[in-house]
Image 1 (tube, rainbow over the protein chains, first blue to last red):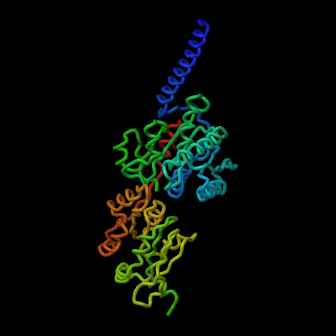
Image 2: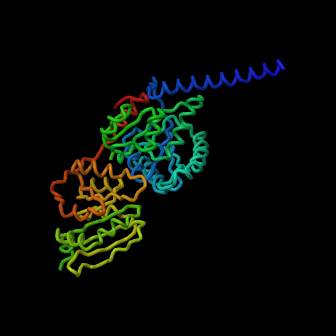
Image 3: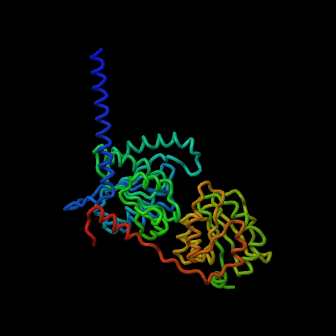
Length: 226
Length: 177
């Protein structure tokens, strides 16, 4: 009887210790989130670029066009499986870099991902599709393990950002997550933006209108991208 | 009559709904009162890009004293249609809005009230407050066309992504240059 009690005690102790270690690590990562980790000799960083659709993609391409691409190498583009246009735009952009000899060899990869929620889909069925999308996202993220995540909504980026954050917590890969709220959001954040802001997942959170910065003080106001 | 003359006399209103379906807008643009007002203001053609909508406007070549009406569903050359237009009436998608503003075309944005998550009016209203465009709803389009003064619109200065790039670079420890 005593042996059983001992065994039970040890198992509980191990579980409690693991939970405690996880929570301490989680708090530590949350503490480090948003803090710049300056490197003495900066190396190129593998970068995941999440393309939204339509206007979101156009804004992201504007941002990419002013980033020094030799610093963000290799690049992995991910777009929703239902979105045929965005990866096409990214390919055109990468081709133009090669053409202008900004980069030497192509170091870009293009991937598609299942979407957690289509425009107009009900919130009930989106629970199941979100699970499916998360599994797929996990598979892609294990393969990519980016050091930088650039995203600007909509929902496609959420599973990817959450996984990138969990990779930090379990020590698998440290990444810096940047989120730019869409120019279409003037007064209220999008659901994706709100989640990343409230959960402190994004290291830096950018908004394009001053009204939003006043409402969400941790955000950086950067003016219009379009 | 020379071909160049007829081109220069053309004043086209281009209506675009992008990849959406926005029958309420196409229907209201097809009403007599809107077409009469556009004609009165000197427009000669109304070209409608109706996207996934199902309402087919009555096409006409303009012999009834009103402007000519033509329509199509999708085109790969929306940019060409925008640049040849004298007035653009658009749905509230940010892509269409900024493409039109960058070309310096007068713009009326019509907000689709049937969308489930209707955040799109935010952008149109903000840009209307800043006098870059007119903002309307399908039922108020006629009133907006009657009351609009295109000379009072201010040109839109295209945005710039360098502030974001700078912050990202600094955060990652890359030097400014």
